[in-house]
Image 1 (cartoon, one colour):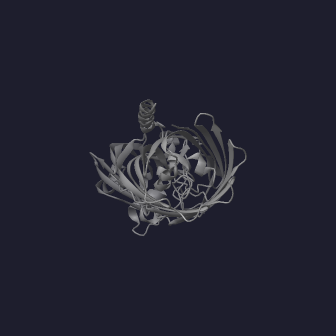
Image 2 (cartoon, helix red, strand yellow):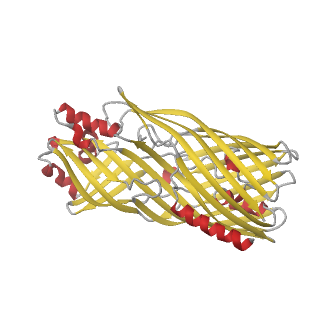
Image 3 (cartoon, helix red, strand yellow):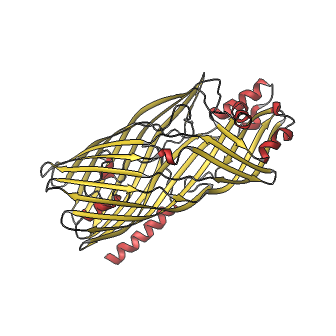
Length: 470
């Protein structure tokens, strides 16, 4: 039986490595909860057994499982509803369902617990088929010049960021009260981007050293005015690196990270848990790309290679309590601190072509984020557990730098879940999350600095997991 289960795990991990791992922003770019047990309780997970999702939450809680093996298979669906409004125009993102598989296996043998898991970390994604605010800005400029905007009609706008972790954890029971743990995480990230920039924005980034949007430099940027017959002919630009697949990204890179954790049983009812997640050490994300420049006479395409520079996942700290109020009722509360400011100060791209190089920097200036997670679990019957929770945080992105392709602005999540114990060591858990709509306004927006850009974002997400112990 153990040999068969390990074979199934190996197959599942292989599938997960090739499956779509794009998620949508919730706590910044993190999910509000990993695994439906924790997600049903607002993401609170630091100090009680929540299955193999512990490898994403606090690896020390693996030590709380029963002797033997546990195998988890999960699927999650994030359903974002993103919109953008600029003057009389409005757009709705077509990216409304992102699928995330996960699989985990853990074995407790004496004082040691070890295993293997593959989980989607998180990410971002929007899809404005037919173009979004940036494309509209370019088309408007070309239309005002009595030119045919059809030459940029193929400029869809979309973003897709996905991060997968394959995790090797090890937990050790120091004594009957204290468990400590750590993990080594292999991290793989991929990204697609199709982004239009009107001349007002692109020109500002190229010419204005005090631009609040960012900068565009390099030999290709210097040569552009000559290529299009003068800077006055510029109508806009388009960065395109997208393989069009939900399963992969045109650019990708990999690296490693680590986690540490502990759980301390203060008394039979109360447990304290904490964890530290290191910043990732990812290589630059690299792939093929096309840059297109719209000008008075049409569009000039330039093919080359793109690198996303120093894209990392942030350092995170977490601390939480779990209180077993009775045989049927447990309450859990966590607080996490996510250091987005260390990794999301800038978004940097480097484009290399036979015609020269171009380096683009878009300011992000994300704030660090404190996340409060509260959940309850009530054992309604011997087989059924009901869960509910809340996940509350601030929007980490300043209004002045928020972009319609990267709308990680959700603040509140309200969660519900149910677990059902199946005879012969099986278990099914389900969670659903509702995130109310958040609206922000960028007055110096990346589509048209002369008009406000309103961005809205709400979510309806769910996770389902089957578990088997043996």
